[in-house]
Amino acid sequence: MREADLYRADPYLTEATARVAALTENGGIVPDRSLFYPQGGGQPGDSGELLWEGGRIPIVTAVKGADGSVVLVPAETAALPPVGAELRQTLDWERRYRHMRIHTALHLLSVVIPLPVTGGQIGSEKGRLDFDMPEPPEDPAALEAELNALIARALPVTEDWITDEDLAANPGLVKTMSVAPPTGQGRVRLIRIGAGSDQVDLQPCGGTHVARTGEIGRVAIGKIEKKGRQNRRVSLVLVD
Image (cartoon, rainbow, N blue to C red; front, side):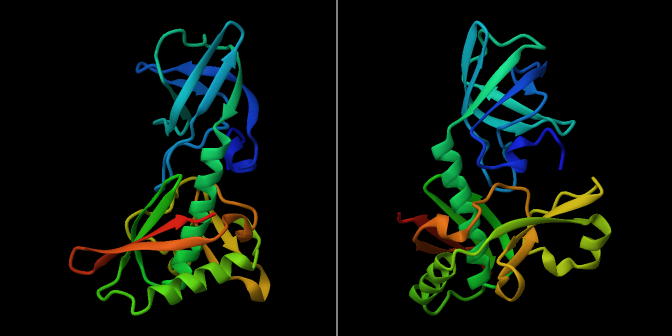
């Protein structure tokens, strides 16, 4: 983890200072440390606001720069802060927190449907995973009940790190067929749900998650759609 990745060090942090390290040709703002999660892994980039002496600007999303930096995309290109300016970063916390709840719920969906994942998307109201699933599930209501039972156990959600070599030696950790875990930095972040005999999931992931599954709240399984010869898309929504 880079020290500049505030969103990963503490996903519950809603405000933080930074300095403008650079401005991109397209009007993006590169902070020296980012509170905003950059779009990736099916999770949208964070939105919020930047404030500096003499200026304020809304941020609509964040993306990854070519050099691994985070680029904040403003709603408008006028009145950008100068390089070196001190910033106050403020998240749209309600939106981020819903992403955290949905993202963690999707990890649990991959537990109750133990099939290879071929795609996924996270939103603030709902999310979905695509599975290598030739036949539809026989009892979606039973899957929903099992998913909500896992959530209700309030299992801890923690992170570990392993080396690229360890991941290569344990390919079973990777559930996603469409998105490869980020390697080449020497180590890979794992998200663990549960601990010891209560562990239910362990997989590489760079996104933001809740601290305990109980924070997700109750969910409902929505549409199950056929996508191609063997793929099926399973959607879930936050109920409360």
